[in-house]
Length: 382
Image (cartoon, rainbow, N blue to C red; front, side):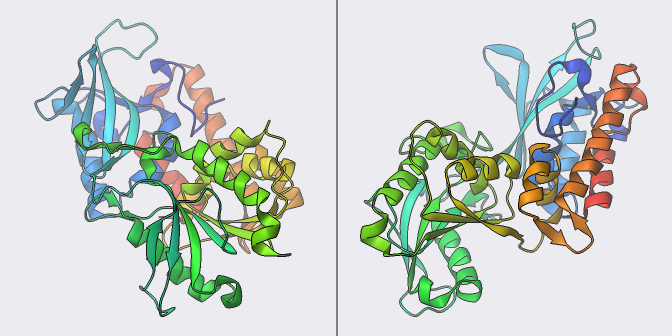
């Protein structure tokens, strides 16, 4: 069955991108329906930058291989285009191409477009505040491979204006939230931050200019797995009888998921660490399953910050595994809707899409942008 977060197997499963890209005026432009979740993550068409990205993607019908695109030197049909906050990768196919809808532009990937900014390296940071007032959090790269604070955070914050990640912005955003919501005695004046800019998260982010790419200290997921293991090994010496409590923000959930896969065969449980998710942008069902297997505790609520309703709920709704987990841990977004209900809604939309594709009626389907609008109506807006 079609998944709104898994790549399609062939070009003939692609759908029209927009009602204006059906070929009446310019080239036909198609997109992989498996990019629904990624699109919602990275493009908010209600904002000026999101509208800019949308217009440029629609504009592929007129200038798909123009001077503003970058071509793949080893495959002349593949190109990428800077669409403001995102980089769009696409192929230009000719009439008669097997397993396709024929001539047209086929959008195959969307990634967050990144500038270098200050070039902070991913990994573990010690964050401290001198005054315990908002905006007074100062991160320093840790020389350790474990955390000794009660509170840890996994995630990163993007500076939209500069389209670059910032460890200072991340430390202050998370620290200010902890001042308001965390147990003050347990917070003290410090917390640990595992900083996860999107270029270390499952190819979510890519460099606007390839030469800007900064050197990374190994693989983000592998390093995080080491931190979790070492933290567990040193638990008694650092914490007494208290657990370490991790807050996992946004895309940090994806990196945690990859780190837990590294731990599957290690034999190392995480029974002295607990996890709480804020706007998780990952398969929460799989995460809960792996955390349970590792004997870790999970807080049975999902936190939300302003402006991420559709993105977060869509991530959970596309995952069948979540339904069994929700029976044990009844996560709720609000009184009117559960994650299980979201899963059923999205499954119904995916089944309708499959039926139309199997019947060769892709041209009659609502376009990709119409599908996004439908999901926004059903699940709540950005």
